Amino acid sequence: MHTDHVRLAPHLDVVVKGSGPALLLAHGAGGGIEGNFGLVLDDLARDHTLVGPHYPGAGTSPVAPGPLDLDDLADRLVDAAVAAGQESFAVLGESLGSAVAVRIAARHAGRVRALVLTAGFPVADPVLALAARLIKSLAEVDRWEDVARLAHLSCLSPTDLADIAPADLDAAVARTLAGMPPGMTDHFDLVSRVDVRADLGSLSVPTLVVAPTGDRLVLPESSYRLAAGIPGARLVELPGAAHILNEADRATWLHHVREFLGTLPPTRP
Image (tube, rainbow, N blue to C red):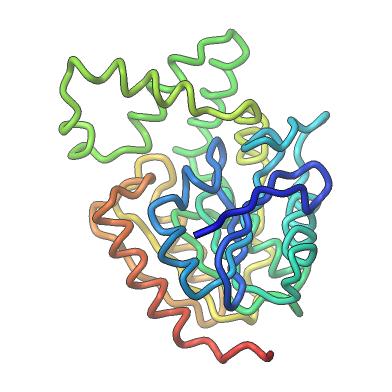
């Protein structure tokens, strides 16, 4: 299946893939479209048009000249979808992308058909706030390998970590280090400032909240707060799942997401 990488929104690298009702993808801090959604892109693109903008400093999007602003980021993702010919869409947000998705729905209610919020948070919980501060502190002294080690510790499940042979752990850390985007520090700076709690009660679109219960970067309680705050939101748990979903947990996620998307009214031609 053909995938385009185009400059649809100013200075953003945008993946466009598939056909059918649109799904706007909002990735996590230090992530990207392939990194966050790669296991399900081909499947979802069979019957949806995927629009996946990379935040400044991710993909080939240039690093932002100053601190990221949540409103601006939300607007630029919407601009990317509209530039791709999609006037309305469901938004799939992961981690930081869940807060971005909530802000998109608050600012562009007429365009958003539904929300899927995975491993999300309305405001950084204590664990996430500490992790964001540690990442920024390590980055300031150029200790990026330690950032990569922290990512393994906080984003993978104990079971997934145990499956990595001790002799292979350094190679796994090196791959993570090589994949970290230039804008990672900016992304986690935004994580530490995000607060969409005031947006939640005003949302009126169908919403699915997915909580990985083994998440050690974003506490599952943060997902529970999202579900409790958004009127009519449906909550599903992924028992034992980590912040980065492994192949089995992502397959379960896909089942829930497809079931949810199947309940949405058909889009108008």
